[in-house]
Picture 1 (cartoon, rainbow, N blue to C red):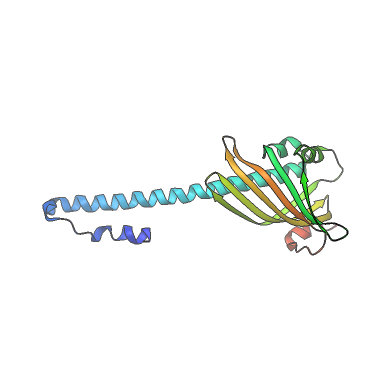
Picture 2: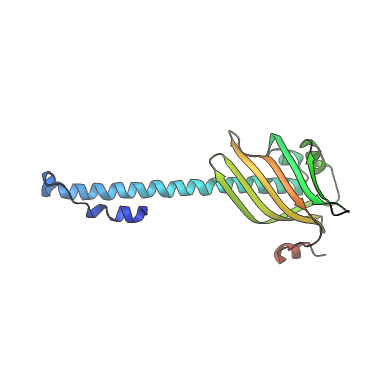
Amino acid sequence: MNIIRWVSRLDKIALPAPWGATNLGKMMRMKKLIGTLVLLVLFNLAALAQTEETNIKEVIEHLFRGMQLGDSSMVRSVFHKEVTMATVYRNRENAIVLRRESSIEDFVKSVGTPRADALNEEIWDLTIQRDGDFAQAWCDYAFYIGKKFSHCGVDAFHLFKTENGWKIFHLADTRRSTNCTIPPAIGNKYKN
């Protein structure tokens, strides 16, 4: 039953005769108080769920900001120490390839290597699903080196909540350089 309909029916509950007329007002106030408390608890639970999704989104944004700044410490901070990474793409012969990274170290080293142009990974259509301390996030992305388009695809993150906040324990992506539908607001940022 819908909780709001349940709370609105509290004042329609018939009281047994022993309560008498003098206690009727007290009972009505008690029912309204209980109804209000139930609603507050439900709203707080909804706000907590929203906060967790915001925290997960911030972890993902922190990763891409660290990449853009070339800050390997910032990038490393969002990953669990046992993170796994994989990429799915088609090679020059159009065969499907699954490439697994042996460790996060090569990725972090690559990000921290000084370069003339920043690594810019723009994301959109981020979807987050969560069950307790486990979450997955999925988003489209376009990757640019400086203002030059490199590739696009989808990022898929698996995260879990630790004592130090949400950490990415698996990151997989697809990569292609054609058939990319990049939102104009993003594409226009990188026009020369």
